[in-house]
Structures are given as C-alpha cells and as structure tokens.
View 1 (tube, rainbow, N blue to C red):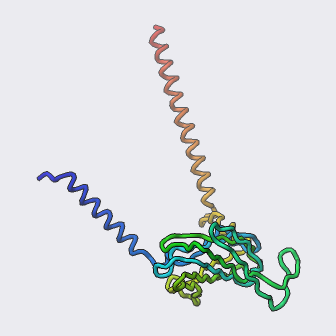
View 2 (view 1 turned 120 degrees about the vertical axis):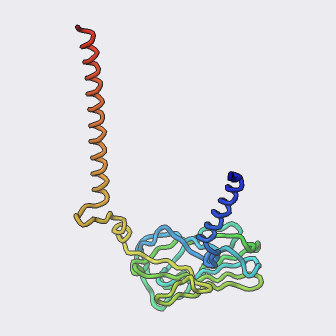
View 3 (view 1 turned 135 degrees about the horizontal axis):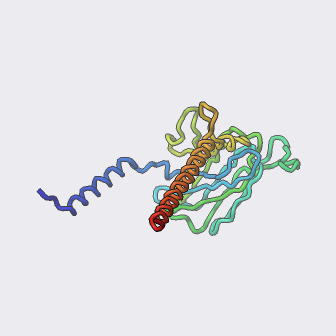
Length: 240
C-alpha cells in the first residue's frame, strides 16, 4: 500500500517538534533572573560586568535598578545608559586602605543606582555595564552583586545567596555573582592534556599531519611512475 508523502512529512515534522520540546523542557524561571556576565574574571585585572534585567514586576515596568558592589572592590566606572540617570553611592571604610595605585582611600563605591523617567516595559530587556578592577585578594572567591529592581508598584530583590552545596537556581531571587580566578589559571586549563605515553593532542595532530603528508607524497610518486611507464610504452610501440 502506498502512503501519501505529504502526510509522512507532516507526521515526521510533528514528531520532530515533540522531540525538540521534550529535550528543551519547560522554560526555566532562571532565564528571567537578574544576571551578570563577563569575559574576564582574573584577579588583579580590569573587567566589564554586564548586568541584565529581563522583565518587570508582575507586569509593571522597571524604573530603578540598584546594584550593590561587594568588598573589597573600591571603585567602579558605569557605562552611560541612554535614558537612565546614574548615581554612585559611596560608603565609608572602617579603616583607610591603599588602592591599586598606592593612594590611601577612606571611601569606596558601595552601590550604583540607575533611575529613569521612561520606565522599561515588562517583557523588555536592558543591560547595565560596570568597569572595575578585581583585587588580587579575591582570587578563588565568589563575588555577589545583589540587585534591587524597583517598579512603580512592587520590586524584585535579587539578593539571595546560596549556601555551600546549594544550587543558586533553586533560589527564588538569587543575587548575580562571578567566580574570580587566579592569574595563570585560565592558561593552565587551556594547556593540552598529555596521555599515558606523555604525548599531547598537539603531538597527535602533528603526527597525523606528517602521516597525511607522506601519503600524498607517495600517491604523487606513484602517479608519476604510471605516467613515465605509459610514456615508455608509447615510445616502445613507435620504435620497432
């Protein structure tokens, strides 16, 4: 019995969509959390943190975003955001400390507050960038940046910090965080791992490349031999 090709294609498409949905699963609420991303987490260097807000407060638009700066970060430089006013709130240190330039400071930036008269509608995303230096002593630490997102009616306080062994995604309103790495750690992780014989993946690739080159050379020589043999045969036929 012949089957209708269009019907088979339609059935295959339905099965494919169902499989994709099963793999993807339901949308995670974590995707709607306040988040922070950065391409550099090395202690003792400068980095740019990008905070993201993806929704409002129960359908309400967002008109203020306050980001808390953890110790021992001393200063930050916010990127100008169109439509938002930016305020850096200083806090007095318990004791004076020296900054990265050796200057004695008695205050640090404890909070950066963004406000707007044109609230961000619910369901729309905006980002807020902060340039700062990760102090050397933060290597190996997890730095949390609690965020309070305010709306005309209500707020989201992304300030919860996971306990040891707890998954931050299990929290209702987790605070954004980064894990600071020690200098040289990323380079060590990027080094190719050696196998039991002490050879690395790079060595294997070099061996494969060398073997491939020899194969091409052998094929070329074989083809040349065939051509020379054919040329000799033709000459033999022409000369009785």
